[in-house]
Amino acid sequence: MLPIKDIAKLVLSRSNLRNPFDELFSEIEFETTAYCNRKCVYCPNVDYERFGEDEHFLMKEEVFKKLISQLKDLNFQGLISPHLYGEPMSDPRMSKWIKHIREELPKTRIKIVTNGDYLNLDSYALFKKSGVNIFYISKHSKNLKKPCRKLLETLSEDEKKESILLQDFYTDFDENQDMFANRGGSIEIEKKKKTTCKLFIFNLPCNKFFRGLNFVLSRLS
Ligand code: SF4
Image 1: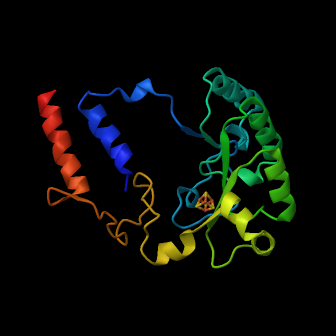
Image 2: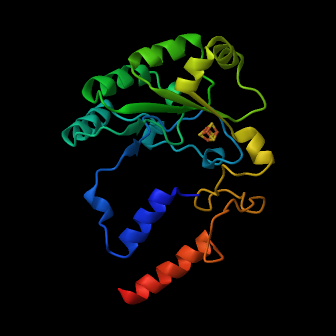
């Protein structure tokens, strides 16, 4: 469910009382590699590789440098997440590129979302030194790989609180599927998914309320 602040922004922009493009975005996600070493059943990666011509799957360095330079021109100070459906830690250039982001955009926060397969004591130390603020570890099997488990056992509770967020997709997929969507219809998980909406507005579930409000506003404009 969207936070109340975002719902308010949405209503104001739909009613033309606020231009959502006045503000600079606060978060950017981009992938430097289209490769993922896993093929989870609930991920579009399961059906096909997203490789380009000649099986290319790595972002060109000139594109990456241009992107960071444009963010610098914008004085971007938000959250940078270099990942989408590719596994960022499989990209051998990633720690160097994180360092580049940190040098060019010192006020940003850098988040790595990873399946944890390449995460161990050494890679964690290297990425932290390069400038990563937080790792989101997505668990996609019953157990994380041994080196990743060892890392989690070794880190202090304070360090984990500050730098790690573990998200258990494996268990959630078999239970409530709260963390899942059907990715624009590309995967079939809708049947099992239960509604998570608990917000009611004027006795209507929030999705129905906003659909109705949207309809009314479209008639007024
Ligand atoms: S690890 Fe993540 S990106 Fe890779 S296949 Fe699984 S869900 Fe998709």
